[in-house]
Image 1 (tube, one colour):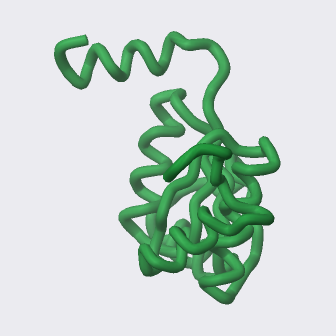
Image 2 (cartoon, rainbow, N blue to C red):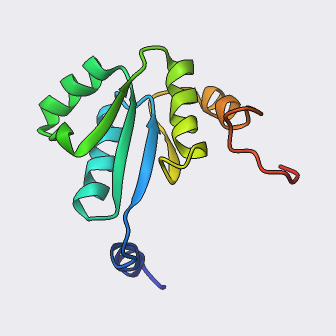
Length: 122
């Protein structure tokens, strides 16, 4: 692959869409990015965060949230942990950081119980 169009084509022709779990999804740019990828047929989304804020932002952007699973978690730490749990449990294929400090997401991702740690060295 030599350019973005080739990468996009490959992602679109893989068959089954990947599911992305977004930690603290109540952000304009995050929702625009996820919606753009969904419209291109690359992903389905799980939006974790303050559902009221997610709905308000999506309404202003004219994003139809019926295309998404929304998990209401108002606390950023809880939202990050839930987003990670969606991946570690197999309900999502990948994690995306939203409007939350990187350290909070990393702490959840490295959690020994729910995190994404493997058996090897980090």
